[in-house]
Image 1: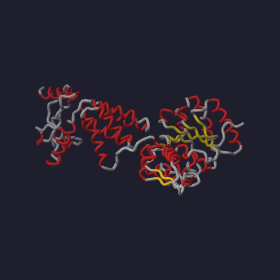
Image 2: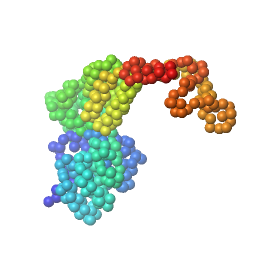
Image 3: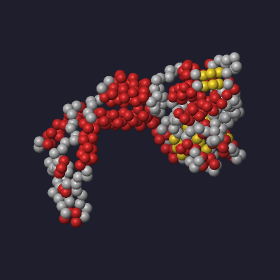
Image 4: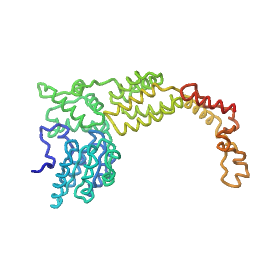
Length: 435
């Protein structure tokens, strides 16, 4: 008896997300950077030259669907294998079965879901068969393959990065399901309000499976009227998702009000308020990377050298979100918000730049003092370029010198405050100035 069989046709009783799974690239929505005309994956499918792949992306972004589409387009046998449920014994059995099919001239695409859950030994079991071409391996992972897939296997696969689906993508997918009478919920005669669709889209965070599941639950909860018409409004969508729609328009006034409250709460050193306003944004469907970018700006603008580590924390959290995505991505975002809110504050570097910029605009391109000009040629040296310049490292690390243009030599732009590490900077600057 075969333990691993090709994926069966979708039955009417299957979940909506499975029934609506695209069967071809023409039906596939999103991920244009890899499936549009002229892009790598479409070209590979059209030329029937599919290499082994690692599909890296967040849940519901289309990893399993793409593997199915590839198998359908190339006429290959598609075998689904779960790294969560199967072990080394099953790996050996499936490889043996695939080899038998290969000898009969049948190509097999082995789809390994959550390949990052396999240990090194399990991943190594695929290596010789991928190398010989016995199988075309397509691994799906939500984790960074650089860390979770061993180097020998990774070197034999092409990594494709999938992005969270956009709001427009999710609306397209939902509308297809609403209209499709064969595979979708079209036979239920549904009328779905625009605000209900918007709420499902925002609450799904780029995950098509979540969006379609919410639509299916709402459809099943709806009651037909005397004419057999079913209506899904905002309250029905909220009930299906068990999540209220929050007052927050990403393109309207409330967007600016809430982000302003978030920034001002961090600036005012109130971590509780910062967490509240961040939660308001994230739970209403704001793009989390927008929030992360604002914290990177804040770390320099409002904290600066009072805590030089703040910018490192903010940038690290921005990168961490790229690894995680939602739903877990809020965890490092919350860490950053509380760190920045409780850090000492100084806008001295921010104000200093604006002051310098004002002089640049008002006074124009003032000449660089001769002694700090570069002198790569003999003629320049004869003209005095670089003359009398003292290399600080040859004078104890500091030389009392003028580096600003003559018209600005008495100006001071950066004025550190007596806060946090900036107090140390101020003391050092005063000591050097008086030396």
